[in-house]
Amino acid sequence: MNLTSDRVRSIGWISMLVVCGAMTIGLTLRVNAVKSQVHDTEKSIVGVQQEIDFLQTEFATRSNQQALRELNDLEFGYKAPIAKQYIEGERQLAALGVAPGPNAPAPIRYANAEKTGDEGAGSSLLAMVSPVTGATAAAIAQTPEKADNSGRDPERDQLKRDAAALSKRLARIEVAEAQQQ
Image (cartoon, rainbow, N blue to C red; front, side, top):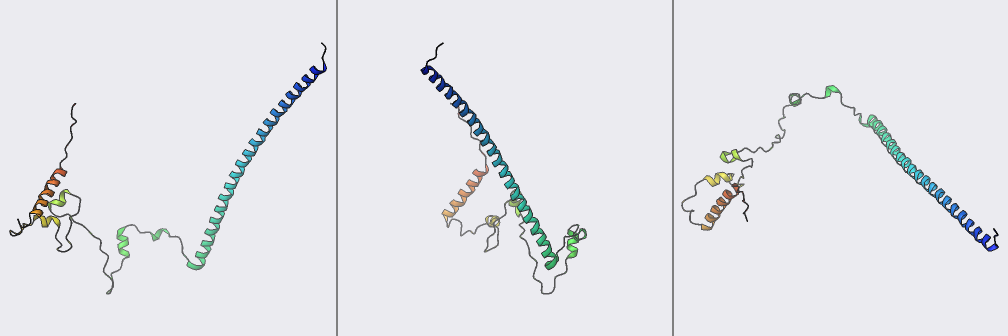
């Protein structure tokens, strides 16, 4: 087996390419390993930074609490409530009250709506009250109209009839039946 110089050179170049390829693959694997380590280190740095931020916040909060406690002790003298300061119920609260003085303002009163008549029994809605006369809308509708007013305004009478018919239609539930085709 006689090797010529050209053949030796081509074998040399092929072996050199194989060595370079192996070194490139080894170097690529090493770079990826270092990148993975860098990524893990960055994740741990972020975790440590978050922990530092948490500890700084905790320290600032506790130092503020101590400063507030010192300020309270020095300036205000507030103390936490003790068990005997709590009251059992409404009777003890009422016992703490005193009679109003001679020039005391009137107590605050809250609105209390009462249901009136048959209309209030079936409905949870409150009756509307006229601000001028103070009469409820139901009381106005029940009072008989004067003889001279009936027929004087036919448009108003028509509106009343339409409203009554509408309320009857709205109060009734009709189930629509599907048409068979």
